[in-house]
Amino acid sequence: MSRRNVVVVGGILLVAACNSDLGRLAQSVVNEIKGAPAKASAKISEGLKTFWKEVQTVPTTVTAAVQKLPTRGTRALKKLNQRLLAYRLKAFKYSFPADSLSECATAGLAGVGDAFCDTDSDGRSLVVFCADDGVYALAANIFDEKAACAEVDDQVDVVTPPATMVDETIMAETEFAADSGSECPADDEGMAACQGTYAIVCTSGKLVELDCSTWNDGKERATCGTLSGAVTCGFDE
Image 1 (cartoon, rainbow, N blue to C red):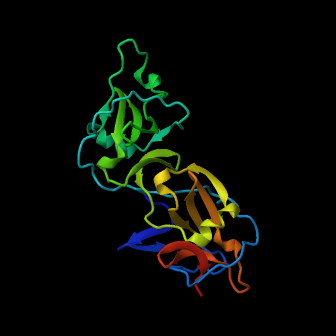
Image 2 (spheres, rainbow, N blue to C red):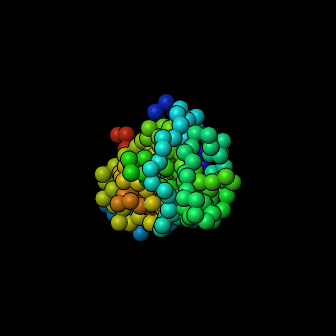
Image 3 (cartoon, one colour):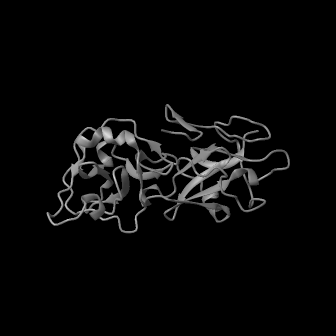
């Protein structure tokens, strides 16, 4: 899935730092930024693409029974990533009361292909979706123990979070970051990824976007990279 500029190879985070001035490719940064940025960060113009990585593994088991019936409530309603339909036999099919109206409508789903993320009483992350024969729940943990349901590129998908924490210096500067408008689960708190010159950070349940290029040491603009194993803003020269 990953459409972001971050690739994990052999446990090493490779970051494509798309600095329009130098076009350099930074695997890591050498000197961390100091002081506050020159201006408050703007939101990524094309919108936040990905923070999570699409799960590539095949489910190893079948979703266990879900005790409570799903209701969307205030959860966002999006389209299901169609690749997940291949795993319908691995999903749990809800049984609704006989006097229910449309099963999908009862669950808060408008039609076939609509989906939302839910959590059951055991804390499992679920993808709830409407199919042509009813409502299904697909547990994220049957793909990977760290997987979760999340909204990626306006679709509901099963994904895994970044494995890299944000540097404490950058976490302290998130007041200068722009709110991406996307939420992140509590388990992702402090996780971060690079997208071009931006550091994407999960903090207080939200994904925020901090533009590293707003720091300038007089010779070059900073970019996003890793330093001592943590995502940060810095200079690679």
